[in-house]
Amino acid sequence: MTRIVISLVAMVLAASAIAVELTDAQRAEIAERIQPVGEVCLQGDADCGGAAAAVASGPRSGEEVYNSACMACHTTGAGGAPVLGDVAAWADRIAKGTEVLYVSGVQGVPGTGMIAKGGCMNCSDEEIHAAVDYMIAGSQ
Picture 1 (spheres, rainbow, N blue to C red):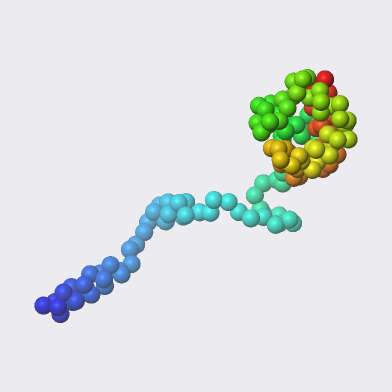
Picture 2: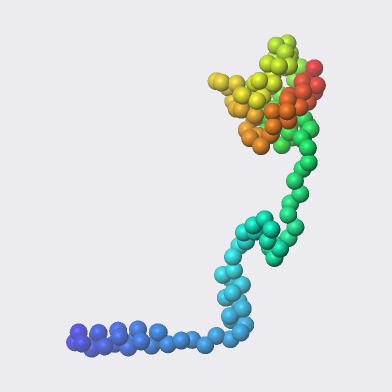
């Protein structure tokens, strides 16, 4: 009995190994389903994707930095951040001086939700200073 079962299993496996002929349309559908999601292009490759993304020239303005990094906390008050335009919340901070605010912006404030550069690690110190200036001007 086991010989018959083993023989049947062997025949089924052998039959399943027979190559299936695919039409060109079926092959095209398979190729489309398994194509890569993206591609990696190295600098200098002429046959890669589209044009390279434009890189901004020069430093970003304070408003641009504020809108990209600071506004998440400074429009909602998240983590105790003073809201832009809230004169009372900014008064004591502004009274300490611009340099103190610059240091807080660049280095963060330990024990608070203010992390270094507000999390904008690709911002230069000068761009953070510009964002601080923008927030001071909007909160006096």
